[in-house]
Image 1 (tube, protein in one colour):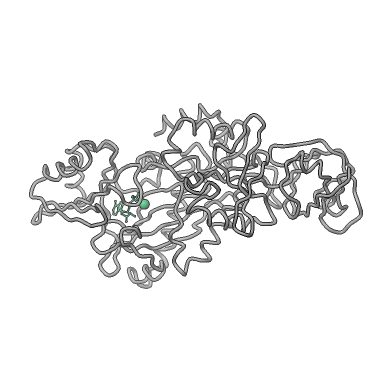
Image 2: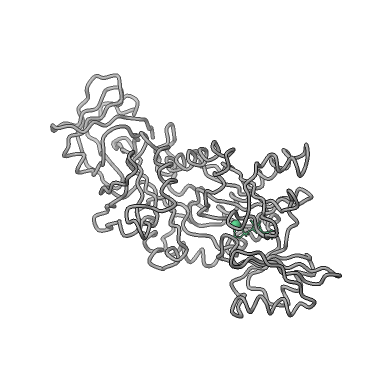
Length: 484
Ligand SMILES: Nc1ncnc2c1ncn2[C@@H]1O[C@H](COP(=O)(O)OP(=O)(O)O)[C@@H](O)[C@H]1O
Ligand SMILES: [Mg+2]
């Protein structure tokens, strides 16, 4: 495969005209009969070559409309085999439209625009919702960002790659959504970040793997006896709803010989700390709050985090794949908990900090070593998750804790990570790195990467894992079910 930039001019006339230099760059010799492809649309064409020293492809209006090409201008071309040229890549972001404004993507809009800006002149970027896809005709009515800030609807073929940013657990949870996404797999269209992670699912995926040592001891659906035993072992435990987020519904239980039990939690915008003499009273509080059921809760060993101003600090490691299909730590945000808060979320009084400064404060000159070790650990965990997960992953947000001895812990993996850490003024270049990497990973998956080779990229995996990701949707699902 070879791949290059090109300028497409849509013009009247009947002939498809290619500059000689472009043919040369693409390594197309004497062949003049070609398949021209855009997303899922293809047509057989014959080419006329003109002697020109640039990368020009002139398409008749009729060809552009048959391929459903939304615009001329700059993009990439890539060859497949000896007789196919692909225009693209056509990248689709799967997202939910805002309920109030039908042509907006709510708080995600600016992120999508940023991503499209990174891919400008090198791709066709659009956002779509499930109901925008017409499977019969294999087309999508996508939303293309335009410079004046509006989203323009255009009908295009099915994309070369799908980045799943559906933001609602509810929407992701319905069975119809699974078969919707499987329709892409059936057509060999790579889709990455299949769905939300549940905490207990992630912990289970890592069980038995070497990186499990970075996960605090965790137990799904613990009984009262389990909670009591964990408290005896660790002194402090966290109780977290398995599919929760933003710190909602989390309790921290601490037991000391002289003070008894202290339960901390946040409710209605306030932090609470309640003391109890006996354990049964603790369980009664939890059960009363949770309508008698803790089956969807995870009990987890509490970690004694490093502190700044006597408030715990933890870190968001924003992991992305890059254009070489490798995991990288694209960004790190340090978050200091609000006074009296058991979590570091900004919504509960948390504050973004500079990572290097925090680590220097906590570990002095050893801070940079600790950081490097944490980065290596995060990459190892990302690889392990991917190894044990049957779908493609391109982005993970890890909540990482570092304890006072410098040990690294992973509390949570988010498959649809938020972008609030980029509000910190020191995070601008890291924010750009996440966008660049995500775009490059889309190029990789869609096989539009410049200078890329002809490996089978579509699964993004190799060996056994690769075969697994090619399994039919149903088998993929049952594999997941068995694993979890
Ligand atoms: N086992 C733990 N020990 C210490 N702190 C924890 C532990 N688990 C969670 N936390 C704190 O609570 C925060 C929220 O926990 P997390 O597992 O990320 O749940 P959520 O889905 O609500 O974000 C973490 O960022 C961390 O500050
Ligand atoms: Mg979290």
